Length: 329
Ligand SMILES: NC(=O)c1ccc[n+]([C@@H]2O[C@H](COP(=O)([O-])OP(=O)(O)OC[C@H]3O[C@@H](n4cnc5c(N)ncnc54)[C@H](OP(=O)(O)O)[C@@H]3O)[C@@H](O)[C@H]2O)c1
Image (cartoon, rainbow, N blue to C red; front, side):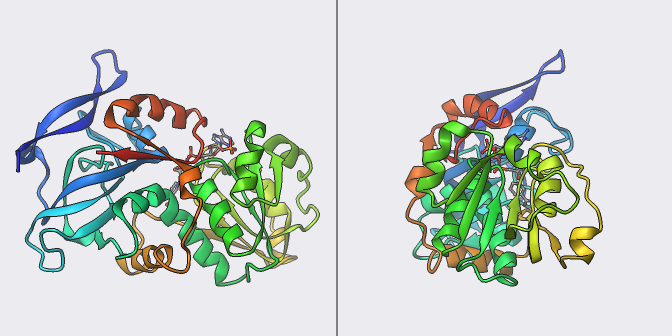
């Protein structure tokens, strides 16, 4: 094993801006941990772009290697549950935040962050899904606890993004009628191919659902956007509706009233993939390897190298990405 490897590194310049470059690092520079992993694939998530753009709520100290997702092969281990040669996945916890992350040929992490990659799931597929897939899966699991997907109307915001694309694809594969909210009217065909049965432009959706209680249309929702769109989603749920919220690309604040909750018995469920339990992760990864086998992941993802990442990072921060960006190390 060579002790030098390549990684993306974000630096803070003397004038306070942030730049990302590919650099050579050494295994000895990695943080302590029980498991050294040779990363085969990583993926780009919104949080990585925040880290690479100097968001101190995500990453406090620079230089830093972002990348909240990584899948690969165990190369050194002091944990008998993860022997050398095991195929593993790490997402969230502190990876890529204040711990050197997955945009790197190697990571070293505590074994408590590691899950086995299920037999029927390659490290590549695991990273096409990545944190976005885990999150869409957690939202779906919460929805399935309350709503039968067959013939249900389920609405997904930020539909062409990572969480959104997988949410649309997964829920439609479970036979739900999926409505996709998007800002990208030129991506209607993409959303239809993923199984969306209706597509609505975000401003049109907002303008038709401004009342505290609008017409009840949806049984469940996945919201990655927050702000006004979330307010509108809440006001347009049917009786017993369930809204899963996981993101805030538009705004972390939203307005609502008690009416959707006391008159329609709606539930608002927060979703966190970063610190959710290993047991829950195993449930989701095993579902993706079996009953949730998705057949349009090629349509959702594109593969890039470390060198391409700075450009892709700027695209995701500007809301311009479509689907998932897989990073091949
Ligand atoms: N809670 C968790 O565990 C968890 C896990 C993963 C992600 N997240 C959060 O979920 C959000 C989405 O993550 P992602 O990785 O899916 O990001 P992404 O790939 O960039 O997708 C976000 C999508 O939202 C829409 N959008 C972007 N900017 C917007 C704006 N200003 N107003 C309205 N819509 C906008 C765009 O879709 P359209 O053009 O189709 O509308 C965009 O493609 C982020 O806030 C992220 O931090 C949370």
